[in-house]
Length: 352
Image 1: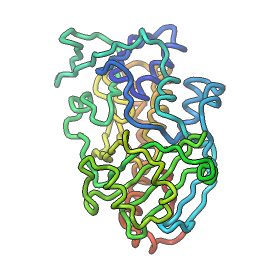
Image 2 (image 1 turned 180 degrees about the horizontal axis):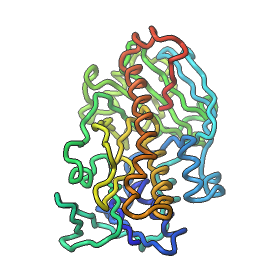
Image 3 (image 1 turned 30 degrees about the vertical axis):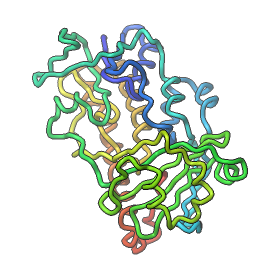
Image 4 (image 1 turned 90 degrees about the vertical axis):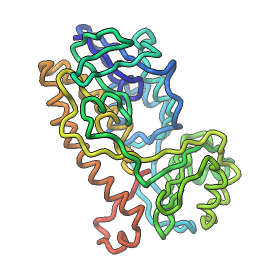
C-alpha cells in the first residue's frame, strides 16, 4: 500500500516512522509545505497514553533517555497557598524539537516545500500533478486545509481562552523547589493562571492562561501585558527576572464542532486535523501519537476500505470523553465560583 501524508507534525512523523521501520509491504511519503520542521512551541506534557504510544514508535530505551519525569501536579492560589497536590504516574516533560527529532526516520521520505491539495471531488494533487495513493493522510494541523475540503462545516474557531508560552532558566535554589513538577497558580476570580513545567537542568516552560473576553489581547507587548495581568500574583516575583519574552508564543485555543467521522473515501484525518483539543486537556500531542500507532495497526489488520471507519470507532470514543472533561476544566477556569459549589468528589485537577 502506498501512503501519502500531508504534514510533518507529530502525527505525520510518527506514522511515517512506524511505516518506514515496520512495514515491508507498505511505503510512506510525507509532504510538508515548509522547508524544515516547525519550531513553534517549546515542549509537551507526555501523559500516560502518549508515553505508551511513544514507546511503541521509537522504543522504550530511546524514550527513557530523552524524558524528564514529572512526579507531582501542584495547584496554588495566586497568593501561593497550596490548593491541591496530585501524584503523577508515567508523566514526563519533553522539548518539542527533542520529540520531533525522535520521530524523524528518513529525510528522504519527506518532500519539503510541498503539500497535497484536495479538491471538492476529493481528487489529490501536488503542484498541479495528480497523486495516486492507496491512502492519503491529512495530518496538517488544527487549521487543516484537508479538513476544510472534506468537512467544510467543521472549521476551527478561536476560543476566548488564550495563552502566552515561553522559556525560563531558573536559579538552582528556585528550580529545586519546582523540579519534577507541573505547577499552577490560579487567580480566585477566574480566567487567569500561571504555570510551570519542569524540563530538568533548571529549565522550565512557563505559560500564562487568560480569558480574552475579560482581559483583552497583548498587542505584541508581551512583557508589559504579562506584568499587568499578574500584578496580584506576588508569588511570581521570584520568577519574573528569569522569564524570557524574546521568543514567546501567543496561543489561541481553537474549537470545532466534533466530526462524526474522520475520513472520506481514501482520505483520513489524524491528530489536530481530525480532533483539535484544548490545552486544558494536555492531550493534543498525546492523542496524535496514539492516532499514529492505531492507524499503523489498522493498515495491517483491516481491509483498506475499512481503515477510516475503524479508526473513528476506536479513537472517536476516546476523543469525545476528552472533550467532555476539557469542557469541565475550561468552565472551572473561567467560572471558579461555580466550581466551589460543586461536591468535592466531582472536582478535577487541570494538568496544564
